[in-house]
Length: 270
Image (cartoon, rainbow, N blue to C red; front, side):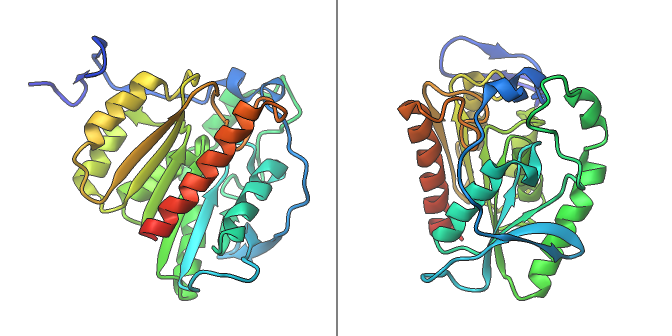
């Protein structure tokens, strides 16, 4: 009998003998590792539950007003235009989208290759990030929103996971998540959650690796609320919001496909 810290990966002969913590790896967040996208965000910063929140609303063919998508940024926060542009694309699909500044006005700068991400992380744990995030969720519920889907990128994938574990949202999506413990975090979902889960993972990611993706698949294999994971070849960590090369059709196709599949998952389950 395997303990919760031991797991057999069925694909191949690899054995995961203990839980794996996925850190925020500084080299994966260097300004040289991704491109800032061109575009003008359509939304505005508003106070939601007392928290600065990027709000972007559908124009025209909108979904029901009792639905909302909460967009959980990577460590670069709302300051990185990529995050606001991607949030806009969910609004274009008909959803009211809310991206809270759960980094409390202190994102990692996207233009400083010497920034100490490890030191930054000490002040951006659950104790600091969950209160503003929950304030926004509470305000949305109080305004009449009945069903909330969360889509989280990198660091945001940690909090899509947390909110799924506690059933504070109705649908959870994680793209190349970090700051997770595998398989423990997914064992918690299986034991406690009724939230459909979708994961977008990168074959070249050295954090949430293909092996850890297979471990997660095994844990979630019989998860009744719904589970699927998509693996993307030729891309690395951050691909769904921060392409390494915006001129590379492989990078752009993967980013667009992750977005389209996320929207389809919300359409099905939200």
